[in-house]
Length: 104
Image (cartoon, rainbow, N blue to C red; front, side, top):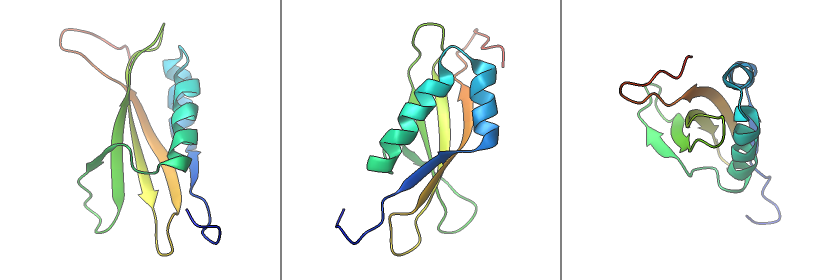
């Protein structure tokens, strides 16, 4: 990133924040760590198809740890010129395994 380029800003939406609290087990802390990483590297996830042209939607997985299940995190990267832009972590959900029940 050049000195004249503004940094990427990443935020966790209110809905995603509430979902992390409902999941518990350190989910909010894990997503907060991802948020901080996204400010340094905005596109580490897998790009998902977007019905809105040009919208960059990504998903990434955070492995489970301790009491926290593995999580799927979906975020939107809004990077109009000049990039970088704004990242909104919009959706957090526990990964469901065949035969398992994440309870949420």
